[in-house]
Length: 96
Image 1 (cartoon, one colour):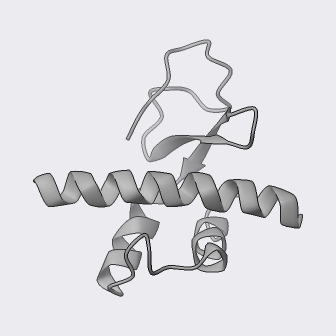
Image 2 (tube, one colour):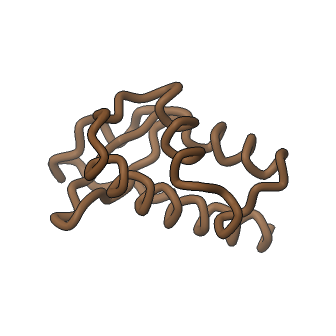
């Protein structure tokens, strides 16, 4: 998972453990989310791959550990970013 350089405007320190940074929305704001790897491991354990999981599943699982505004347009932006991050995670897991 990508970690942005210090001073990049991310909400969390780049060296913070358990933080994954994703780019959300049309302006591609960098957002730090906690325990995203845990969410992705759970999705894999349920055999839900990126093209099989719903936007609602992605957002609701990430929301267990993070604040995601309860606004449909923002949820869509998060779902797109989470799906992209989950796809990258699955690709990385397949290479290991």
